[in-house]
Image 1 (spheres, helix red, strand yellow):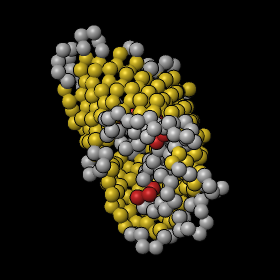
Image 2: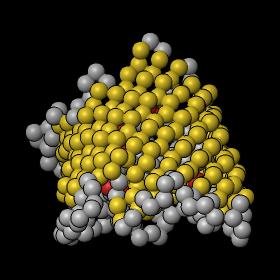
Image 3: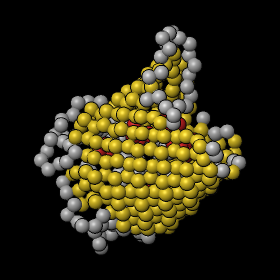
Image 4: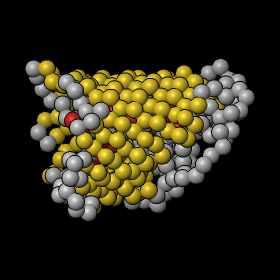
Length: 364
């Protein structure tokens, strides 16, 4: 079972790239790396007037460096620049201090529970906290990102790389603990660097994650559990955010089978809407030499409008193949089907469709 499947997220992989080896007392030596994913595909949406062919990309330039102090501590930085124009041009930007006690991180980055979460294996187009809406239009009004409508990778009140402090313990017999504190929750991509009013923002958020990885004889095991909380704005009728998720992967002989579950018990509220709901995914992957294949299913539902008894729902299926051409170069192919079902009957907030897409994935 590949380590990327065990960790369940590329964020931890990116956090460990391009580690410097500077000697004590030297200035930090910053290196450049990153990734580039270019996709081209065809889709058939049930909604009229949606384009059939699409080309899109997801790429970042990562600047990272570290130095080791005379006392043995490692101090470093990580800045991730979006390679496509976006409102969140700097994706993540943080500093860290690491030693035998573990690792402290401060700045703009995902929270501990998010980074340590384990989800279903998938070697192609991601459908859990992924990019299926690049091909199948989502008309429901519920967001795919950081909510159970589209992901088991939840965050405190929809935080998106907001400013925070995080601690990761050393891994002991396969077990690691992570804790994050968010003075104020930032859903805008971590760009906010100003004070906020407690009547306008969720504040005092925290995230706790547990991650376990180990091998027993020929079996690989990876498991995770996370809890998320944020204080509601000081406005009558709004509840604190509360959610949790769990995940498990089992591997043997090149096969990886696993899945995850998330539940937002008290969601972000705005007027009569909320992000409360549940999500789960399940998948099977097999790797043989330079080839990989996977089948993955995701289901998410969100309460959305509290005045309507039904939920917005998302059902997505994808089968994928991946071939590694060489170090840092892979080609990917995915075929999938997605159905978005809005909670209000007869309002045009339903859509379904299938897609076929290929991609070129580069790591540098």
